[in-house]
Image (cartoon, rainbow, N blue to C red):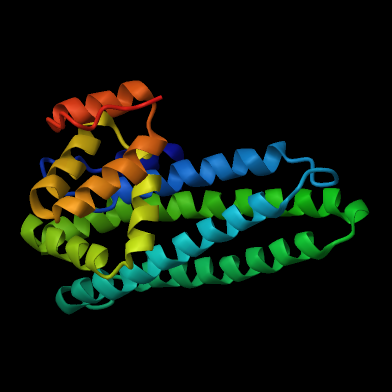
Length: 240
């Protein structure tokens, strides 16, 4: 697929709900930052424990993400358009294979002798870069071809219901981890829409926990102040 085809295949939302937008921005930001960290690491000398644990957590997050799509989105599509998610499922299967290979490589790096770590670190860096390149193409397909399919088959109320089902299935710790990745990855307007909905519909203590433990630590002072002001939160003033 050439670049011209890529550009021509991007549909406008035309006011429709894009359930992929925020979570895919979160994944792209986290994956790019991880790739930079891997590239900057001196594998022969640096302490690798924190880096490798963060990489494991990010891979686990990605694995959970595709599982949620398979449970809450793909079956709904299949009911109205049989076999429409076959290609996406094959891509997910490829992702799982790559998750296993990367986990095995992480273990090899972690257990290797210092004199082997530079070569193994290079291998991990290149393997991870190839994986996220593949994942970026996969997310592009979901946000273009599959979004067009979703908009044809479902109204926005049904799409919101799918997303609520995914969010409702998350344990609190994983939900907070997702918010920590998502909030700094999206635009100011997108943050306001996301958190205004949470402020209105979620329990007060849940909303306040997200502001304190996901928004405040991940946003700069200016962005957090902007968010607090637009949400009309007189008590959410950043402290630095």
